[in-house]
Image 1 (spheres, rainbow, N blue to C red):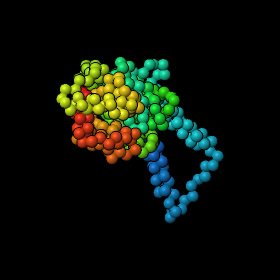
Image 2 (image 1 turned 60 degrees about the vertical axis):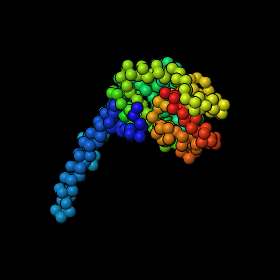
Image 3 (image 1 turned 180 degrees about the vertical axis):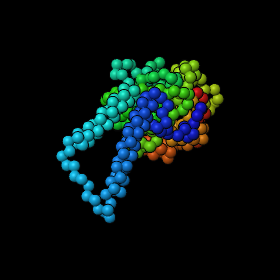
Image 4 (image 1 turned 90 degrees about the vertical axis):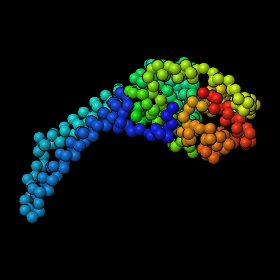
Length: 311
Ligand code: CUA
């Protein structure tokens, strides 16, 4: 598993999907057109500066009302804009999904994490697995305020608006991990709303999806068994589900131990960091909706032992 700390936010200028490439191509083409105009203007201005220097003092011939020039410098910008218009339409067609296809994955933005639901019923959080080379449709929603889903290497941004479903393509050319972020200010922890897209060959993806649908293995050690009991007795289940049992206000924990980070990227998912998170979530991610439930050291140890079995 690749830790998201080793994966940095990509750039739209280095696209890893056909949809991102459509946008990068539009940028490149527009930059070329602008560079051409810049070069032309630079040459003309330089020529005029030298040709009509004050010391030589020639007064340029006046051409006011010159019909051919008037038509020329009206038509030239119109043509440039027409070209850019068609390049833009091409990029929009290449990067926006059709409206009539059912989504493969639903991503619901929350303050401050991402809920991920697959057509198969698989549920996860802050990590999206996809098969490489397949154009998937993602429905993007919000559970609270306006967020924005953005994986720079893989495509355009899309707002997650409460009460509305937007769709976006999600595709990766080659296996790898691509980091995304929330791109719309959404409150205190907007900066820690990372999402990791893990692209895998079809077979590996199918194995991951199968594994994600399975119940985690039952806890074996005494500490883990105690942790599982605590989870059921305390308030955890009001917000967190494990294999379908529990609330949905917080991230699904069924396969928590298989994820690379905690708190939507704020810390690495190691037993030490998990313990630090459970001891005081507000110390790790201030403003997070996970309260400090004042666990004793013994309870912390039991919870960590249990959560580490959730593979
Ligand atoms: Cu969610 Cu910014």
